[in-house]
Length: 353
Image (cartoon, rainbow, N blue to C red; front, side, top):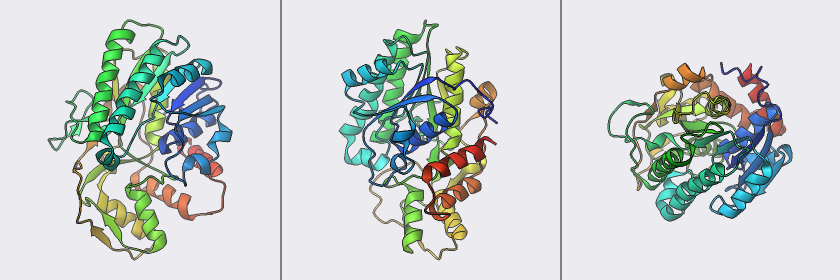
């Protein structure tokens, strides 16, 4: 698969993660610690009272957890320099489409200025050899029914996707201005699909909303039941980020800037399919209702071409959609009193087997 299980590269590596208190950032912390890395995290507090960062006790697991704003460049530079990081993963973002409509200015500030801040800091700190800037699958110009490859035109139809497109342009500006001729450090952006997994309690997210409806035995309201999304367990893309960061560290791909870590086409299913699958697996008699007041424009079809990562990184998505859903149901309904950090490590072990 991704050869992480037998890979000693990460043992003792100093890693700096922005956005480590978020859902994806928390899983990244867990996987890197499992691989033996020394992790420093930099992020705001978790958005929700119930969150994976707290449930899995990640603050006590990693080497240092810094609660601070990515927009505070002086603080960011100070903490990044003190960490003596070899590798940086930038995940800090306002990551919700609907929230971007409600607070577009904050979305632009966090996602664009935040990315500029981390890139500027990376360019000035010599200990950093490899960096992965995570953007989004929603950066593409979604006008045709196609599978998007890294070289396709970028778009931006809503404040969230526009902010991520802008962050890609900021990235390219820094690459061409400060990193292009550097042999000491390599950097890339990574784009993934709709990540799912245990411990996701985010607002306006499909699976957390469905799980809540199942637990409360109430109807499921869905904005766009026919929308097709590239669903993937969170361990698939973050294993790709880790794989990419290692290759960048070894200076293998200094000029191949963007990478898709999307699922195989079999995992690209409708929103309604996900809801029905969870209802079936939980033996729940729940009614799916299309929400009448859908005020926000969303992409109907979105799929990523992952052939570049497969060919050049030897990275392959591992878990099917059905198995991924089962791991989420196990997280929420199987042994509810079990230590969540242990649950995560058990699932990581399963993934790497």
